[in-house]
Image 1 (cartoon, one colour):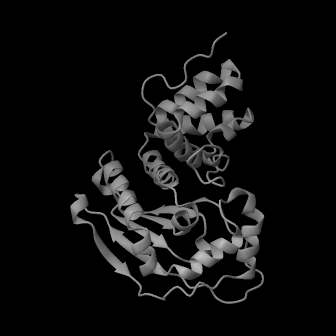
Image 2: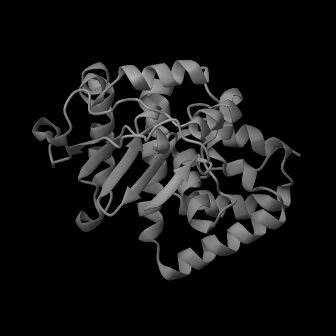
Image 3: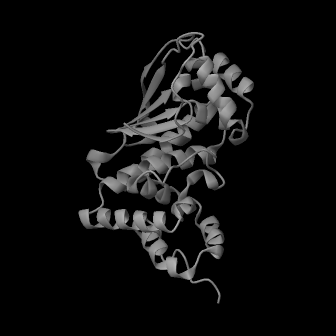
Length: 260
């Protein structure tokens, strides 16, 4: 499983064990045919949180729209069934978006399951595992923002798009990653630097696959913002940045030459 975004610090002190609760939505070819594949009953998530997990939220407080206390309270109040009822429209939006993006990929790589992880230990994570995408309930509970959900899904589909690149294209992305790292420009593709993304999101500095997934999200959702940031980037880097944007699915001329 490829983990994206925030990583929890290892727990050192525990006040209780954290329950792991998932529910799954099967994504079928037509949105009218969405069905629930499995769900634990009400009250299955007891909302217990380790001391270390709570402290990790304090470390991130400046990047979060709610205080750590408020986040923990919401986790305690929203068991999986209450979550489904409260966020039914956003769940329908996410499954519809996945269904739409699936159409651009080979059938054997299309996502057919959305898994919502209610465990606090998964806070701020999203990952693709085979034909499933797992998203932490925190993206719904804490951010409550349609655009953030869109960005998370696009980033995960960026990993699928990377997987089907031709070998030469993957080598090219790897070369671009090295050059951007040497030029201290990987920050340009950190998801969390842009509106509509969780502020801790994206880690393109980790490897070429993560750079590509972030670029896939940003060039298709935040292209005007990237152009503004390029105002202060030396012109000699533009060919490299254009090539990455094109590989990541940008249409036309993504980054015009800045004025002299």
